[in-house]
Length: 135
Image 1 (tube, rainbow, N blue to C red):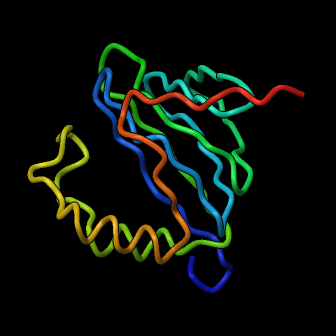
Image 2: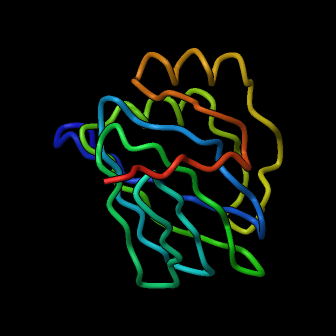
């Protein structure tokens, strides 16, 4: 939904798949689990979500996402305001909803360039966990 400033997307992670540690400088994100299990690590804690569970990730929050269920793990993401839709349109990998991982890999150099343009900052490779904030 470009006009509203919201972007809806799908996360499809196989068991054990991880995103890199990152943050969004221009938008917040909500993750709602449809199938399987996701563990979301942030600099304020860890949330393990099963179907129907959700987590809100505020702007400028370091986080990473793990497909922690045994099989396929699927979730809906909502970002606002979002430039993320353009990133996915440009470097997303085609495949069917039943095909995890995707049928082909993406072009990493373009992914990094567009990520920077939309305000996404990578803090480490998959497996890197955010440092906990001490309050």
